[in-house]
Length: 306
Ligand code: 3PG
Image (cartoon, rainbow, N blue to C red; front, side, top):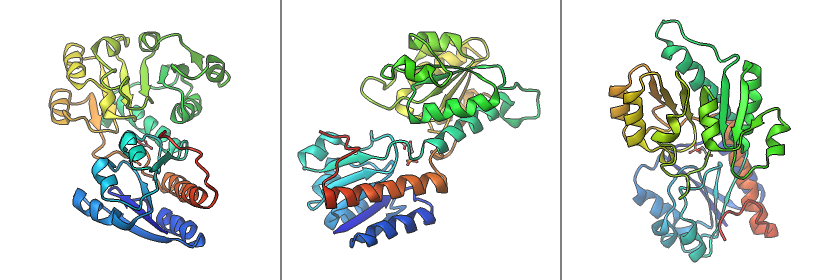
């Protein structure tokens, strides 16, 4: 049985070591393809793989076609919009994610970005504090919950909107569950995005929605770039010089954002939210265990395709 780690953005070495331990203890072989850059290298490496551990690596029909022995793909992380689920099902491949395993890392980065923004990107001028400000958590999943936990330490007032999570679950954490996404944006000084990229959410963070933010509003994106309607956000930020946007996922129009909104726009050069040793260990080892459980016990917990 051959398990391939294919990560263009590699895990910390300590996580790779931990994955290797799990895989070898099960009697399987581990292969490693890191920083592969070109898709051709990935297509070649998956040729004899029975299982695949990935991060944001794009796994499409071409990859499944090149992997005739593949039975399972585990996305070591939360979002699986990078995997073609229909193609996986058509090829008889099980796809899983590892929910919750890297969420603290992402939540901590939310505050790294947030503090940077309210302190005017550390340009030496007088900024603002987070204490007493209203924070809107847009979707109350694993990352959203961790954001709420950390925000309490900053003394922020907490609000959340989640179309699927029951209000009682949100309010049990001392977070006010608002009735609509519009209410969240019109109420909060800062909105932090934690929605996945799906057909419904793509481009949904648009002019009309972000324009509801009160004066001096801040939008923080550690989710996905596809959820932002970039053209409309640029138009809005041109009309509203009070708004700021900080993101861990570089927009397609990064150059335009950077040129037009100096001092109120920041993007990390590479998605860094889950890029910690702890998150890599948690998600990587969970992925390895899920693969072993799948082959040895037929366990399909965390399967995301039909
Ligand atoms: C996730 O969906 O788990 C995060 O966006 C992290 O993605 P990464 O593994 O590519 O850093």
